[in-house]
Image 1 (cartoon, rainbow, N blue to C red):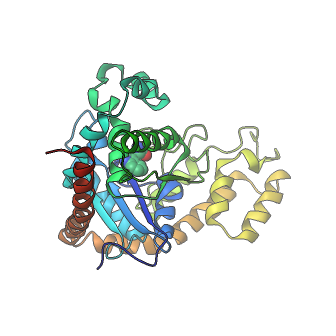
Image 2 (cartoon, protein in one colour):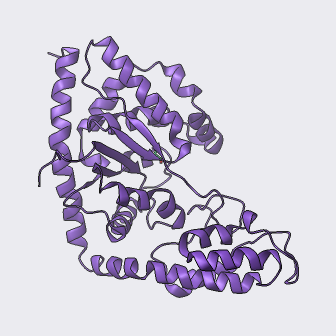
Image 3 (cartoon, rainbow, N blue to C red):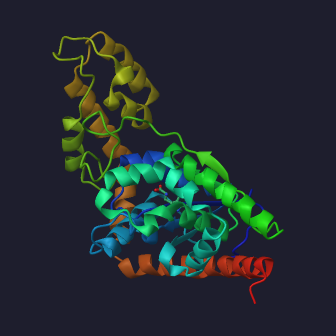
Length: 333
Ligand code: TRP
């Protein structure tokens, strides 16, 4: 399999921290898009285990979480012969490029980033140096593979802007054009997605629905979902526009069902319980092939690790070539 495709539009790179089994939020916000982009781009998808260390209290689940996430990506349709799927720490070059890019990064720019300030609020007891450099490592991820486009959620916009700036600083400082400024491909992301109807779906808040859950677990979680809070009694009319069950219907139910619920909810023709039952049924139908593929892959864990190692060796070819150019541009002896 050749590393560089000549027919595709360019290279896409994206990374995600190894959070283990993926949930519906990950699927709609990232994975679905990763899969679709393979048709048009040369894709590199990276499990960013080093980034994970910036916030992790313990590493005991790191390996298992990496494996579970890889399983989800593969079962969802990442094609490992065509795309590169790998683990960040398998490519040493990324850490070298991190160091080099840090030399053209004003420290104040990093500590001013809203994403950094947010982390300081979240973990005041652990404001580590790696956290400050998080965007530099992310920039290194992206530019090491000469990526043209980066699909990420809008929360990552400051990091993408930073990446573009650091590329310009590097190229200007060393009078070169070896690094490429990537474009951000913002992914649409339904805002309210969790069971409590308030926060973003997230594993740490345990308000999520895992792709790999059993049909029964899925049903149970869906039945717990908070709907339009104004709809206290069965006879109260609801507003689907503010209901996160309806948001999910838009992704997983047929156009007819969506239209039907949209009308019936507003005139209390359908109750929340029935509405959720339909969603659970459709979700389970939608995920059934995925779950079958995942269970099959899970029977051969060695093959999954081989895929990740093979991805790393193909990524290394690109990484080495970029680093040779970077060394030459800087004039490292
Ligand atoms: N910061 C990203 C996130 O939390 C993860 C990430 C690391 C990433 N490196 C990347 C995303 C490179 C895109 C490209 O979602």
